[in-house]
Image (tube, rainbow, N blue to C red; front, side):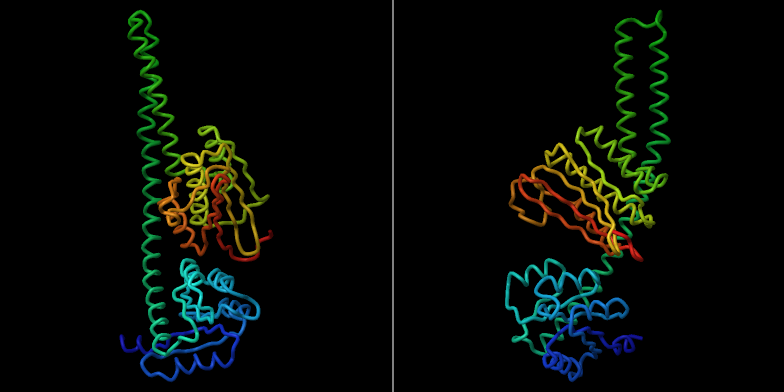
Length: 360
């Protein structure tokens, strides 16, 4: 079984407009005897994107200078079409800053053409494919952890609502009955009972809020649009922050995982706005475009940055929540984008693909 597995060729899509260089790369891969390769070729970005729609490959060798696309935009469009496919950039541009940007955006390697050798190319492809396999396993594990987390949140929320909430309700009723026993209750005792009743009510209100934050029941009862409206209204009342909400006239059918992911992104963003931004307003916008749905949550506050950027910055940073949001979206083939500017606010954008055409 192991020998059969090793005999399977690594499928390579070479995206290169120079026919001569493409033949050279093909010869490098096919004429060596250690690793079997199957090489396919596209001379334009559109050709490569069309190929990736219907065919499966193990790795992409991508030139950044194509007739229909230049520099990092070339990589970004390929990565958007196949976010889990390893991409090795193969370019004439010996640019350290561009290389770092490409790797940060998800590129597996950055090779300069005039330094290319057969050994370097084969090692780069092999390492890229192996890293991609490891990342895929980690994503599967992460998806399982997120699913278990959601299920545990649902269980705890139900327990808080059905058990602890009911106990607090009975406690409030008993305190109210005691307060009505006017002849048997002194003024001091009445004051203590009144304080206890107020605390019980506050505990009950806090518990309902906590249960809702853990698992909003409206998401199952009303769907994403109804749950978003309900949560935005409650958030505005609790925080005093004005929330402007924009929803499409008709929300397309979404899977349960997609609804949870978009709702959690919105929830995390509003929490960060309340805790860190200092903004008195927040905006939530859902929009449709051909092939996908986009959520944008913005504020006019301090301009928060993701924790991966400017680690020495004294300003508040978005931390673990951002990583969780990004992971949820990645599991569904989506992406998370953050735009922040000091003193001018932050916009968090979540994009998820949809099957079929969606009107914008």
